Length: 564
Image 1 (spheres, rainbow, N blue to C red):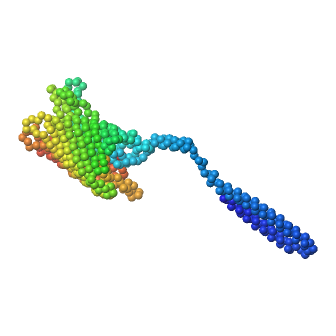
Image 2: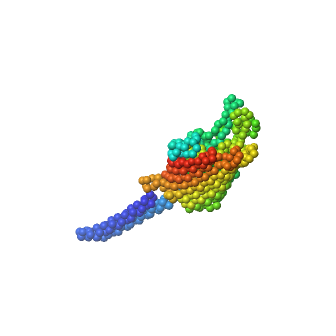
Image 3: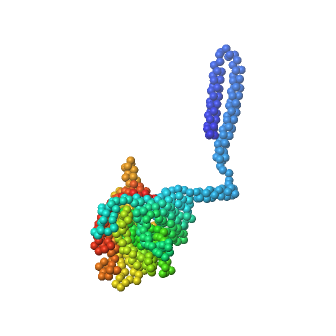
């Protein structure tokens, strides 16, 4: 504004000088053009004119001097303006007070919560989920929701050659999982999770049998212990801190048992895990186990070791003859490496091994005198579908002092392709076997793979040494020509729970059955939250409960899944 004023003053000054010059010129012109009748006054008139010119020159000089002063004053004001705007020097006390105010504001911001959409913590997957977090990240809270609804149709109600009670539904539905809970970290180094499953009314993950006391106190009644509905899926706390990269965890959980087990339920290629994998985890590491142990991972390795007990919610076992206790105790461990990982091409190679060893089987007391106690181990599984609760593979309860499972893992991914498989061995050491009765062993294996035809891939996650479901590059939006991710999958699994079926000693023979399943599936991922699955199974059965009791049947199933 000062510069504009200065410019205006200069213009006024120039105009004044110009106007004065014009006036002087006009005066001179008037003088020289004086009529002749005044010529007799010529001398006097010339002198006066010189005086007038002198006075005018003096007046203009004075005006120019005044205007020069005004201009100089304006220049001084313009030059002084920046200096006036400059801040005064800050004293040490003022700086300290300002610094304290900044620190107080930072502390307030740290305490304030922020909401973000971030990757899940390592005990889940690197998938996105809503997270409430303190600004410094030391406290987080993430809701967990997984709902899976299944519908299935069976080709025949009685697949076995020998008529029995193993009748399948013609069709049915099941809320396979309905998990609601939360997880996160507190005070930076501690983790927590609590997840309740309201689903599974027609068949939860495997639960072993147990015995419970009758209210009369002296009579014992048996309970199958089969899951029939809502149960705690997870409830644990963990600590990392100085143990990093290892984490200590204690509570209710599903400890890592194998590659199929480490793959989260919402990331499976098919409705259920392969039976060989499920039998391994059901021995000592299925969901809801009370456990304590360690797990950790580095850039190319993952390892875990847990001591596990019973599934939460089982009643204490009655064992009058012993003070050892009634619950199962086992050790579960897993080691995996991924020596080749290339996120840009999704080329990953996974190698691993796992084991489970039951140190002390569950105790069961007979329901009649003399109320003897046995230590039971059994291997069983439903045919990779839970809409019907019928179980064909079943060794029955084996009186044992210990049991084990061991497996090797392998997987490779490349771009939109995935191939993985595992081989398992199971065994039991009998408790006081009769003459001619030996310790049984069993086996199972599977191989499965998929091709995401829209180009996405199953990303490998070293935190749990398993693959996650693909994330659509173009979430479903037909108005923009986007159709989500589409995938085709296949699997073959084979499980053999028969042992010495030709033995001359009847008590040595175990007709646990042989089950082979061919599966094909189509998966549709509209976005990271939704998934729709269409699966076909061809199930082949042999020696189910007795020699030659064979059969086969087909199933078609549909699943709708919401998960984050």
